[in-house]
Amino acid sequence: MKHVLLAGLALSVLAACGEQAQAPTPTATQTQAPAAAAVEAPVLSPMEAALSGAWRSDDNKARDQFRNPAATLAFFGVDADETVIELAPGGGWYTEVIAPYLNAGGGTYVAATRGDAERDAAFAEKFSDADVFGTVNIGVLGEDSIAAGSADTVLTFRNLHNWMRAGTEAKVFADAYVALKPGGVFGVIEHRLPSSAEQDPQGGSGYVHQDYAIALAEAAGFELAGTSEINANPKDTADHPFGVWTLPPANTWQREGRELPEGFDGAKYQAIGESDRFTLKFVKPTTTAATDKEASGS
Image (cartoon, rainbow, N blue to C red; front, top):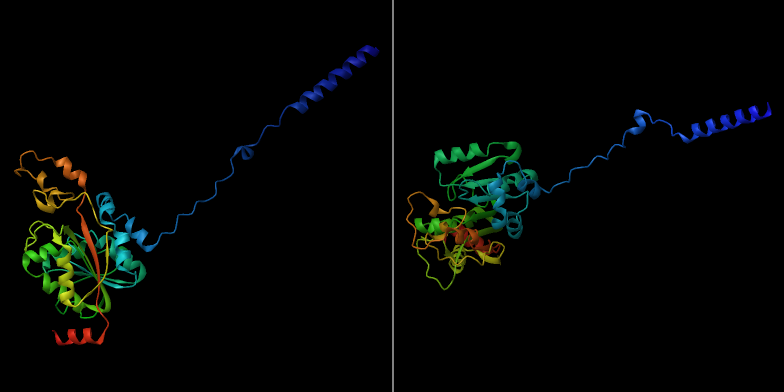
């Protein structure tokens, strides 16, 4: 009987140990992983927001590596609360950046066009989203639609050769001077022709001497405030069969029916990328003499 009791006691002890060895079954709540902490979106500056905007196509964003909009506008000293005039904005590649940037900071964007009603209407429609672009104003430089002394900054991107073809380059520079406030900035970017190469007076190749642009600006009354190599491309020799339009993004040699020179290699020009460009910053003087000159029209 004693042996039977001892055996029973041993079995009871083993059963109790087995129960303790088994881990408790977790509940459904216990199996859930801790909730991940919410990740806050980074706060973008007005320029970063403009550059990353969904309204810009991937193709346009891809050109930032050649056009360097953030660094370029910073070099010109463009603040988001300014009144900025863009001369001959074309399809609005830079408008897509400048207008939202100014809209975020309370500034004013003005497109200075040729006054073509149909084109101006199309441009206004393209940039009609006021939430993104603010109010996009359109006027003609040198006319009442753009008041004298109204702008903090006037900018031109690769337009000088077109004005040379029309013979209006001196007038455009003079009108830009009048549109600016004293102390205002005139920013000029153009395809650069090496100083050793002969310049076409009508800008037929699209390339222009940097010294010629400086001379035009100084003749209009501006003072050169700085130069930059932000938009330089040392791979561009500026001596291409179809001028600057041989290079991206124009690639005019790809047009159907275009007769190409013997041995022409399109890949060579693709590898160069966009053109070599000079970047010049001019300032309208604040001196009494400069103001008197403007008032007299001399």
